[in-house]
Length: 184
Length: 287
Image (tube, rainbow over all chains, first blue to last red; front, side, top):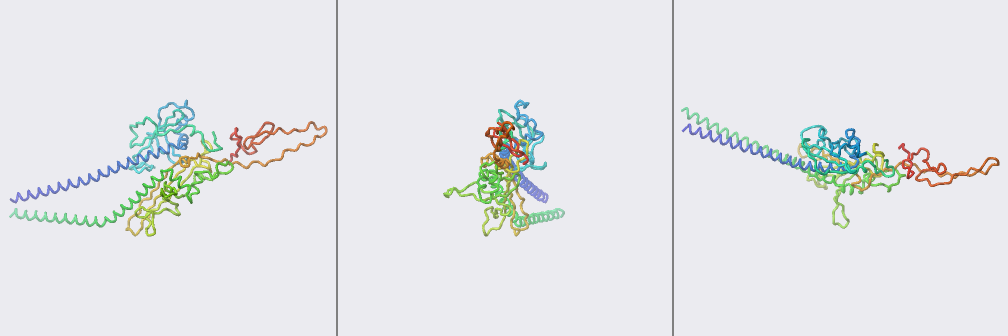
């Protein structure tokens, strides 16, 4: 009888502990999953805002003018100045400069992408949460600089869309429309 | 005997365990109730800040908001960079200063049509000296509210360069790009416990001015006033034995601000350089 009582108590205790463990695990999993779902939703929203912002900036002629002045983008300037100077009409990666002179670039290359945080802020140094990478490609065709913008979490396996995100006239970039004093 | 002892011990342990569990539950509930007010207030603050930030994020990305703002009182500096003061007069220096950060009042994109059909969005961000303030619910502040958030806005315009490789011009009629920024500062009353103020939020957006005011960037060359008109040289009477009289060259129409220097020849006045041969426009390049 005593043996039976001890066994029953032990069983109850084990059952209680198991139930408690299950409840704790479920609650922890719920919070973990909830956080993950929120993070994914926020990342998707940030990515779309970031993409829209980068597209808007790439459309500004000053952005491409300053990009072409970057020493790393010699090919861009060559292609803009003469189509024969372009070695290929295929998209090539390049550093997309900020339209404001002196500010860091807004998109980079696969080897050196520009990182943005989950809230869409540019990351000055690598840190947790800077998982949105911005990479830019260009091609010069029929007098237009075509730009592809890629925003993804890793710089591997980049697949460009068939159509560019932005196309800016080379004439508009090279010829400054500055009123009477335009210098050509 | 031995088994009875065991039984008593097990019961005692069970009772102690139960009491322990109850004590933990009571303590946790008490702490939760005690902190819930504080955490709710913190949650509310964060929510209000995020709501404001979300509105600002949306408004600042609308060129219409900048267009509406530029014509409002107190925003003269913004207006001077989006529209020329005088419809392109090359003799007047542009009034937009390049690279200078200047505060302005940011208005929402909705503008009253006058007939009362559309309500105006009103001012949503102010200058550092007169920021737009919001209460603890994120609404515009009234006389009885205390300030919980304040929002300020400013802009920096950049003039186009005069040459492809040159720096932005110091002044212009219409800027090429404009960087619009805002800052949301948490100013919750300190009486609300010892909670820390929320992180200040700042964001900047760069626009092509053409996308706002539909005007291409324009710089005015610093053209000096035209040279004073000199009376034509008087032909001196022929001196006996002095050869034929000197005939002045036939006057021709010189384009722009060039002057005639000889028969069929025009050139820029001293100190000026010809930058547009067809139009005959000369400027002083040491700007």
